[in-house]
Length: 211
Image (tube, rainbow, N blue to C red; front, side):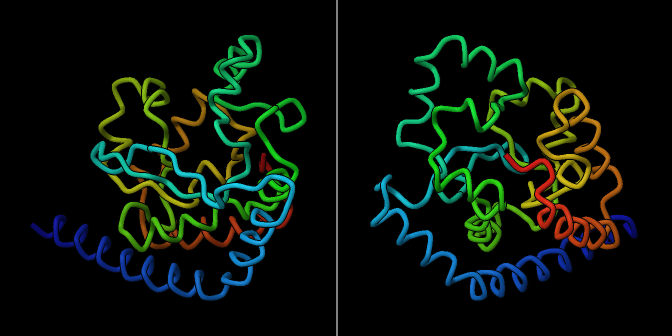
């Protein structure tokens, strides 16, 4: 009973922190939202400002993750039309170098290198689909990487940042990523959350693993 109450207390405090910082974050970054919107309204790559994709959340629930669009429209279709690149994308932990990825726009390269493309996920946090800190939400195809540990991985809310991000982010692929994400799941605490958030600011500043 005490362990359950401790867990409930942790989740309550974590949710209050999420709501507070997500709200403040959206208010503070509103000029960035307006600036990016103008780029897509009047720039060379007109189209939707937000990119939405189905990701897997806590307990396997599916939700739409929000990002500033950094790719051309119908990006997945364009990638799959190039069989060589698509095969490389799958083998490279669902990533391609920006210089060889035909989907990424010029604006998108800037947004990704500065991690500004992730800002709209503050909306996901307000909706309760994500948390500030947790394992990164994956697409369904990636769940296979977690094998028999899927249930453990999906036992917590996915995060805007997490232990994988501060340990190398895109520079660290599977299967190492599985161990990093599960380290957070098995050791989650407010102290660890604060440590991850502080280190995230440093990593974003130096642009490590951002592509």
